[in-house]
Length: 175
Image 1 (tube, rainbow, N blue to C red):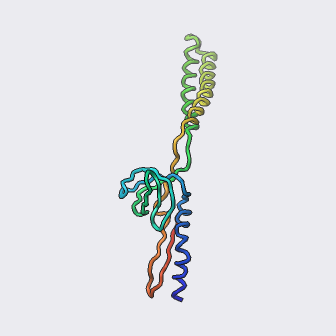
Image 2 (image 1 turned 180 degrees about the vertical axis):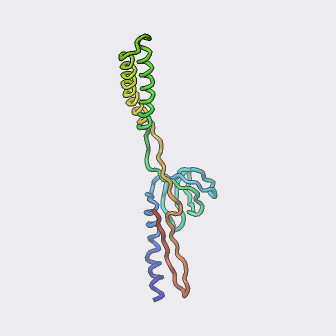
């Protein structure tokens, strides 16, 4: 019966790299940004190559092997994000303010009735809509990288000896 755990360890050990890669959501060639003070890396970008035991294999200007224990921060590139909605909101606010100001300025000083209210309201709504459209177009053209931080304690794969010459394989994945 002592050989069964050892056989299980031997069968599952080669797949620990695949399990680690899958649990972290990494794909070879994917861009990573990491901080590892032992390597002198602070928010430095690399391309993911693979996982070997407890070490992340990366390429950048040079090939780098970074043990998980040296990592203090790991982020995965999720793509690019645009600023369409923030641009639309800012454009709406700016357009509405300008429209209200113009509506107020271009009505007669002695006309405080319906005409001035309509001019102020119409200017605010009209230029607010135009400003939202322009702001959305400008925001859509602004692109930045979107990074997702990976909790470093998300995956642990370990093998350890037990009493009686037995071995155990332990793995924990948190979501």
